[in-house]
Length: 157
Image 1 (tube, rainbow, N blue to C red):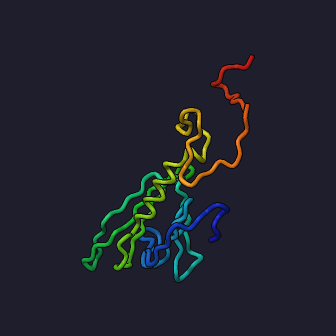
Image 2: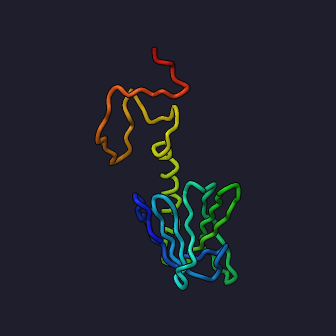
Image 3: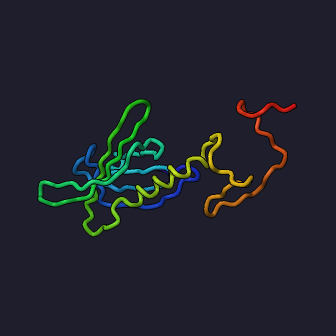
């Protein structure tokens, strides 16, 4: 799958199983700044792309397998077009200790920066008449004497 313009790969996790949809098929989970992508290693045409904007909940659970082994699973509940979808990913790499912290961390960052991507009235991006910048964000240009003519503003006379 191709990344979209402005999309960056944050992390890659190998030996990840889509336990809910493709049990027994190991794949790779790619964490980007906009979504997670899972694809099968044996059949790359079997893949998933789940945007953070569709996430309802995301957490980890400890699962007990048939072989008396405990493995950590990433549980994601999403909503799209009035339907709910559940995804469970398990990490079969016993050497990996970070598991899914990158997915949860990037999702939290995505949610907390939503007001910077969407225009919302009275959101907390202006402090003391100045724009609050994100880390590493720079102002390239500004335009003076611009008016906000939304319905909730006083009329100009």
